[in-house]
Length: 33
Image (cartoon, rainbow, N blue to C red; front, side, top):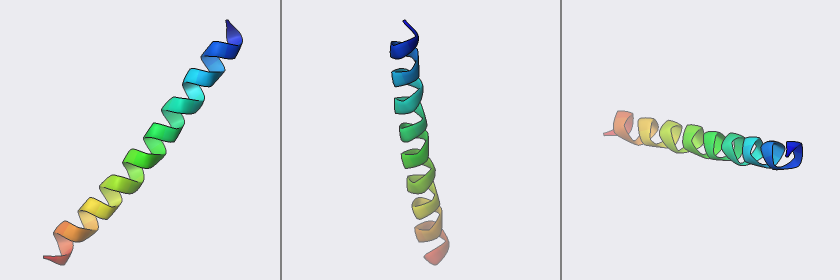
């Protein structure tokens, strides 16, 4: 059970990082207009 939880947490943190990067890029492109 703990294994699965760690796996989910790792995926969530990866998604969070990707979203953070995407929103930062998005923000930059909006500012650049």
